Image (cartoon, rainbow over all chains, first blue to last red; front, top):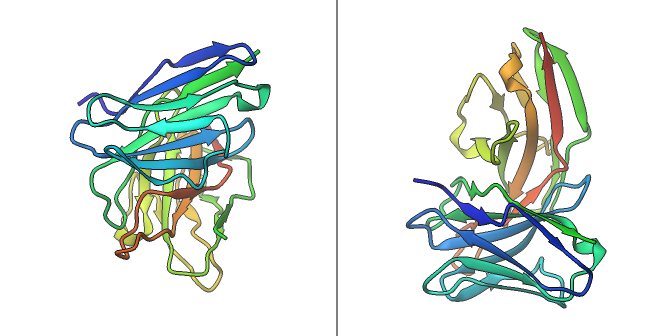
Length: 115
Length: 115
């Protein structure tokens, strides 16, 4: 079991470009979470998805950010018209149906740098 | 609002010394608390959770609701314990009353154990 796979590991974008971050959850996991870690800060929740549904997007910026988890294929976090403040590490985590105390399985993250 | 505070960004001890990583939380309901660890060049992984009352790698953590704390302790630190440690809280329930993996993380504590 390869665990949660995120790609790319590093992504460099110029201001105004689009960034697409991919996350393949652990096989059999149908719940995906995205977290963002800004420099010198802890991880901050962005969005929680189940297959084809967004369950909680309370941590997503209102504009330019979107996420999906289609029936087939990886979950995608999309950032349009990136700005320097989007530079961060973006982590994906997955779980099977959640039970109290269940761990999240994290990927290695994608480090986005906006120049 | 949920909040997790780890007051120490850096903590250094010598091998064999006791270690305590502090974590305080703010949450009005009944929280689930976790410690996650990230070793060098590895992904974030669950260390332990309060609901299990377990000891992992010699670490224990007791939930103190009166002091709203969940400090991580180990009586005799080892060099391989050097890592980044995050305290995390889950307090969000869905409509059915089931928790899901929306975690609020502290800023993390870098533990260095010297030989």
